[in-house]
Image 1 (cartoon, rainbow, N blue to C red):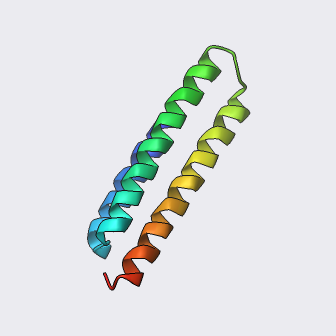
Image 2: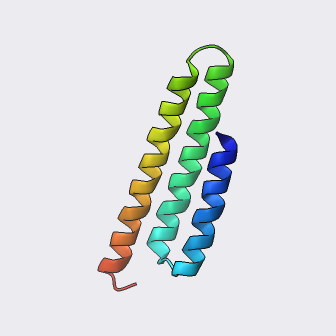
Length: 84
């Protein structure tokens, strides 16, 4: 799962540069990705310790990634509202 997030982050960064994202979108995207990575790390540790199942780990990570995507979209909307 970590490889997936790292690859997703790299792709998002590359696409962000190519699309000339606005400052709010970039800030929201960065914050969302950092949060998703922290949740993924915590979920992996919990799964490794036997506290949750692999499916629960995946669900936690997906929820955090969905939240990160929503944050990015909110930042994009704010940039567009300000003419960026």
